[in-house]
Image 1 (cartoon, rainbow, N blue to C red):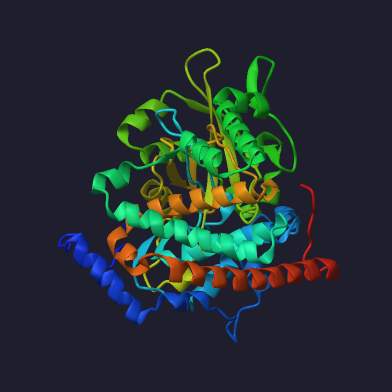
Image 2: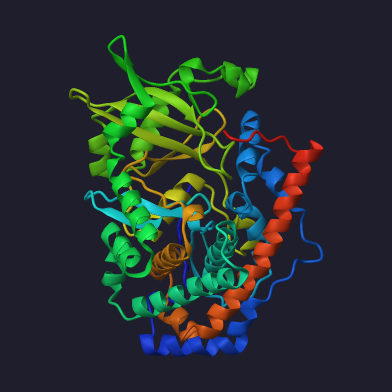
Length: 480
């Protein structure tokens, strides 16, 4: 199998780049072909696929007994539904106007897919933090999903309709300003640029209410407490002198307690290699750079558990592995998450990627200012499913957007938009995009119009899910 290669991310030849001033002019000229105002219009296609059919098509290869949890979580609110419906929006974005400038896309850039985490140097930073759907594509798609989520979330916290539209426009304006800023920086400065926790707090301190400032400070402080020791204390316990993962079904199930006949056919069970875990571990180690492989070779896997997390990804196979090092109380927890094809792949005219776990890892490394040193991948021997690995809960922190007031919501939207622009600037041509956007006023208004229209559609789709659950077509378990 050939390793994947992320080539031609930008429309420009990276070997023979024109001066930035020329690229800005080229970007501005694109407005003649794709007017800024054109991004404001969206209507459902006459042959638009049934949204619930799209969701259920994703379910075919998932763990069926966990799907009611997925739909129960999506039922929580229109914003929860939007979080779990990236595949629906990907299909709807296909027919929207695009400039032809490509970037690496998060693929699911809603407001709750940004957060705090620790860098290898133990600094706390804020950035995009979900890359299951990462794929090269039109930069506009990420921004439009972010803006639509802004309107849906704004409605949930009780903002007026005019304010929700304004917040979506703010996301586009912040993105435009950030892209202009990055287009003026040296190439390495863009690559090294990051938004740390102190910067986020400064934004909240300058622009949000006392309540917002207090909540932001609490979120940052809480993230700093989520150390490996805290995670060990929560997810493991010592019994008979051995540390093991605790049992908390159905969300956390140690594999020693799992009936594998629920997951594998009799033939698959019969052909399962006895050294499955060891071979998976070896594959994962081989995916790492030499120095990180050397580090992890000092550990061994002593326990594995099935773990349920997220919203739209529930039903995919996700595990945690407890590792033991050579010293006293020397433990590490890694997460293994199944990777399938991106929701964007069917709508972008380029080749698909064979190794999707590697796609996730490579995409994350490209888009994030700093990434987990334990990012790697392996392909399972039994079903040939692909998994990417990462550290679990390493000083991770999430802002609860549904609990924000108007001023703190505005601050948060601006920070997320700035981070998205930085991720795109790393993998595309900021001068070209900035030249197209210009001052950003016409574009931000258009994005506000689009976001409101699409939020209305998403809420109609949410109602269809409610109706399907009421009729018994879809089974949902709430509160799990």
